[in-house]
Image (cartoon, rainbow, N blue to C red; front, side, top):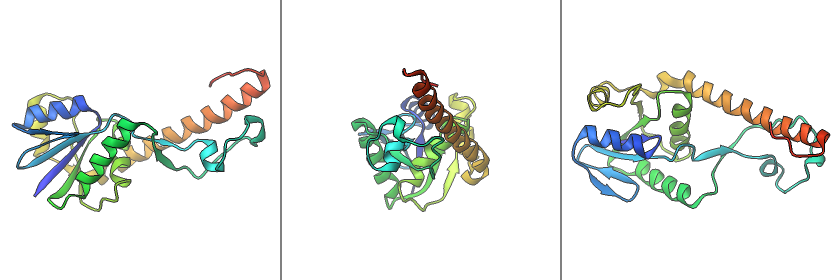
Length: 188
């Protein structure tokens, strides 16, 4: 059985690959007899926009503000992101993978990026956290032997959600409100 390590970005994945030994390179991931290492390209998911919630394109003036949805994420509309998410989803669902390792950056955003990938892949395997405040080969090798349950980082995940929701609420609502009042685009 193998551990699937999902890094937040390709450069972090490469640091882990270099630290853990010899790997065979595949399309979107690296593999050896113990590990599969893959990556995101930062945020693969984004919050839906107002038109996604309404189901049609609408004029800004036709929306009652503040607009406060039941937040939902969607995969970004980018060919490369869709292809990499498809690879990640297949890796998560592989029968020889018995554990998933969240290797997002050591912050709330990194935690959330990988958590969303796992959640949207219908994975039900145990998830651990590879916490790397620094990315030296020695630190990576030490941390891989001291993985903690990903649930320990739930508050970081929640902080990431709160920050994302607040950015959306403030940005969407204030941009629309001020732009309509100023009669010109005024991004907030």
